[in-house]
Length: 70
Picture 1: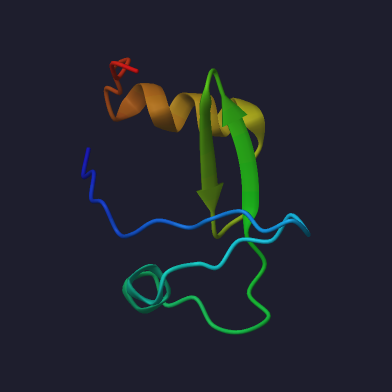
Picture 2 (picture 1 turned 120 degrees about the horizontal axis):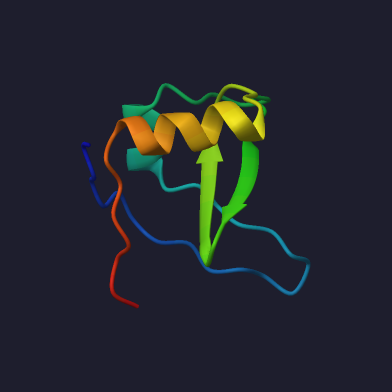
């Protein structure tokens, strides 16, 4: 699994986040791109392509994810 820190965002009072430019460039995310959010335990996962919960679970298992210390 390839884990890479690409910046941080702060939630505004209106509930908005700004996606860091590094993430937008790296993942080729342009204006009007839809992103999909999933909660996995205490983690928030954002993906560019809509995927079923079961497929996401299989993808995470396939890549050998392990619980990160919180």
